Length: 65
Image (cartoon, rainbow, N blue to C red):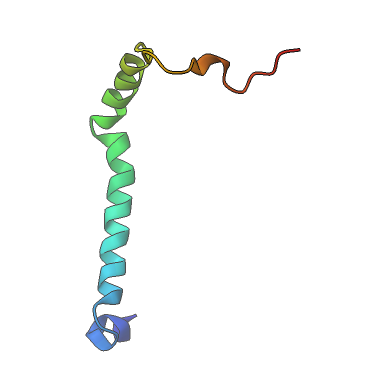
């Protein structure tokens, strides 16, 4: 690992390490930050609105007997 981080293969190993930090930080942000509380409330708020016009989405995929 030290051989790769010394710069022998450009900056790719450094980018992989930074990518892992970003991914782990992003996953934990949903549990630690305000996203854990805000996103469920936004989902409940936005499901109250029905689309106006167009086809009725409630009957899509239902087969009549």
